[in-house]
Amino acid sequence: MPPPYARDTALDTIQRELTAFARRARATAARMHPELSLVSYTVLAHLEQQQGCRATDLAAYYLLDKSTVSRQVAALERLGLIERRTDADDHRVQALHLAPRGNEILAAARERRREAFEERLADWEAADLARFAEYLVRYNEDAAAHP
Image (cartoon, rainbow, N blue to C red; front, side, top):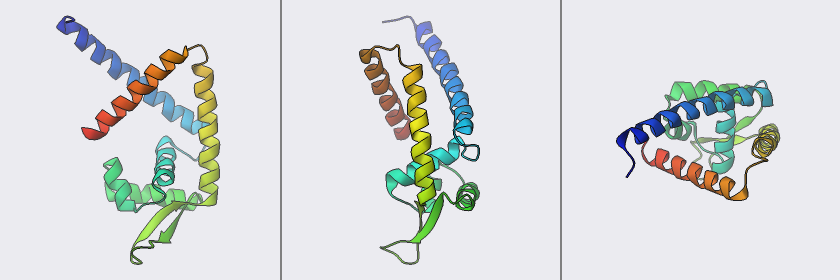
């Protein structure tokens, strides 16, 4: 068993590196599309993955206040990236969906992000990439289970 300080050192390193990762991700998102922040990108990706959802679902998923989500949704609507549609199961409910332009922007941003990852990780061995991918999935699953 490693000494206790090794765990503390590892946790400090993880915190520092994830913070640097988040800063880089925000900066990269701004370069991908000047009007598409990292938050906007993740909202669009979530809408794509869920094939639409209500604004209250977004607020619950991101643990945000409804007013914060409302402002984000309004901005994405103004840009023509998302649209409201009447829910097929409950006509009183408006669901948010990607607009055709939102699909285009998301696909283009995803492709540029993939190219950036391919470039950054070009020298990594396949086994290292697989391990890294597994650790990221595990981390995100644990984070989702313990918000």
